[in-house]
Length: 378
Ligand SMILES: NC(=O)c1ccc[n+]([C@@H]2O[C@H](COP(=O)([O-])OP(=O)(O)OC[C@H]3O[C@@H](n4cnc5c(N)ncnc54)[C@H](O)[C@@H]3O)[C@@H](O)[C@H]2O)c1
Image (cartoon, rainbow, N blue to C red; front, top):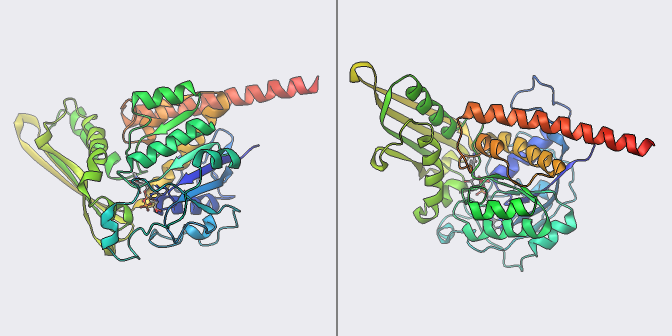
């Protein structure tokens, strides 16, 4: 059975957790294994992902083997799989464009990006040469031009895309149409972690609403000490992140709250927290007899493995769609795995539809393979 050939744009903390995970789960993909939503998606286990190309711009990562670059500073996520076999993939220089915020230069090297002064490679050409099937986009928030550059390269090279960044590609009708016409699947935008602040906040909003309790006001304040949080100190880069996170919660209420009654977003950078993200969620509401109630929640989680646990499924769904010749945004997968899909669904509905998509696709693929084998035997 063929592997899933994946290219990575942005070898940061999330990429590190994912690459570690692919090795960590090798041979451990039984149903009971912790940390996986789907030990198998169709015929593919976690370790059937094979990295075939990687792009970054940081001088400590470019030119190095992928398995070393994932541990290079400023990456600071937890190391749960230190031994990674040689991949044969060297990190290549991508086009910087708007990937590096100017304020990064004001922070110590160990905490921030340091772009290399090397000519970038041709991304589309590299994707073609590597025979990548899916590009995983892990660029910093606010990298509008850079994400669009990688999305265009996918269209040019005939590569599917999983877009973890809150730059709207799958959820933008024009881009979605381009992927549809090219018969290339896309899962986006802005990855929703396994059990992160967004899914918790959505579930609480839905719970209150479904129990007839009226949410009056809510906030979600997040702090962390990785480069994702440092990057987001630049408020102008945050616009789409705030929109993505806010719409994700608003979509679960009967009636969206007034803008002044909801505040959701990355709130501060605390260097010593490193990849540990803290989320503080508060809901103020009215129950029976308009009697007030309040809820406060504090979540403490390692940010990057929490997203990798979802990306591993998104990649395999993209491969299923490729095998079936489906193009454009995969509606159920986008709604289940991403904060800003083309169409918001409840997490339960999205999960059910995603499972149905996986089962139906796996059947269609094995049917096609059996038919192919029968023709071959004649
Ligand atoms: N739980 C999570 O961690 C989570 C959840 C949702 C969304 N996301 C999003 O996923 C993305 C990746 O997160 P991360 O924590 O890995 O970020 P990160 O800061 O650790 O990594 C970003 C990487 O991109 C590189 N880069 C910058 N410009 C580039 C360019 N033009 N071309 C290629 N590489 C470039 C940087 O050098 C760095 O290695 C972010 O947009 C983040 O908001 C993460």
